[in-house]
Amino acid sequence: MTIRSKIHNRGHEKESSWPSDFGTGDTTPMYIDPDTKEVKRGYPPPREVFGIAPTVMFDSMPKTYHEGVGREIESRSEWELADKQTGLLTFGSIEEPKRHTAKGVQEERKALARDRRKASETAWQAYKENPKEVSQKVAKRAEEQHQTAKKAGLNKLIKEAI
Image (cartoon, rainbow, N blue to C red; front, side, top):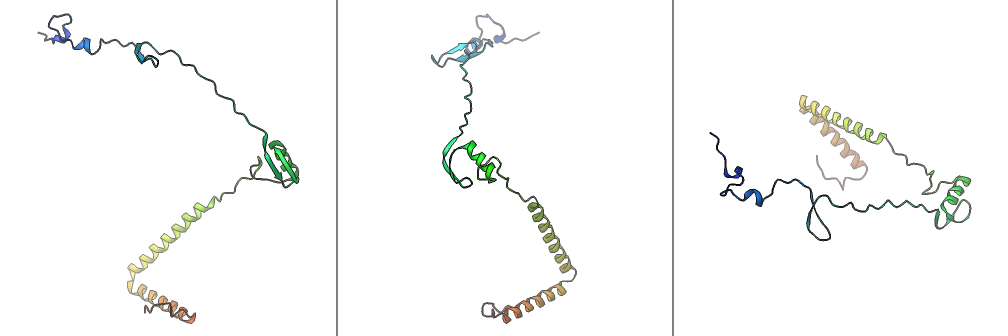
């Protein structure tokens, strides 16, 4: 025996109005007409597509004094020609030299960080092995620095730490 809900018995007088109120199953595309603000069936009409404006490059520029030729120039191409003839490279030239970027800076920083880490690990290992000896070395070094400061006349600025 199959049990059917009233929704599936289309055309029955006691059938719910649910399917017709909330759609008919029609999958026709719809769009909102921007002029009338109404929902219309189908696809919207194609919009007018404008082309891309061409890029315009001007050869003219404000009058600028060129030191190589000793006169004012109003044309970019003339400026480049003057640069070429005089062997000058001015800011904004096509043949402007590229900035040199130091490639080894990052590697040097990493190497320095590795060296510092290794030194601190070595010092920590030495302290763990013999803390009394390391403490004596530190105290001796502090005394030497204190004596050097006294000889330089900085003893008034240094607090007596020992």
